[in-house]
Image 1 (tube, one colour):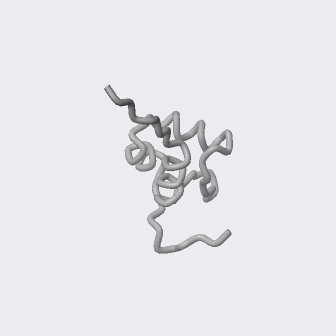
Image 2 (cartoon, rainbow, N blue to C red; image 1 turned 180 degrees about the horizontal axis):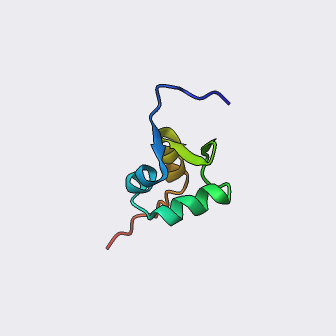
Image 3 (cartoon, rainbow, N blue to C red; image 1 turned 90 degrees about the vertical axis):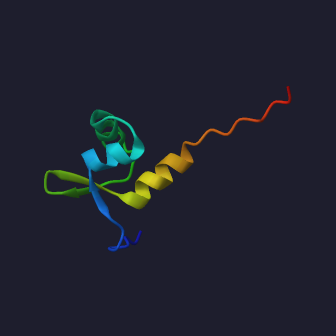
Length: 67
């Protein structure tokens, strides 16, 4: 898998704000392997494109109802 170095690399806090969830939620997603991430020593970073892809993969589309 190639990484686009022009893709912004986010801290866990920045990733959480972008996804509109808490920092512990992003940490859980990375720890359980649900969200792709980068380990730089002890630091965890997330690519902006990985957050976007994760959100799109978990999008729930419901059928529209006629009233």
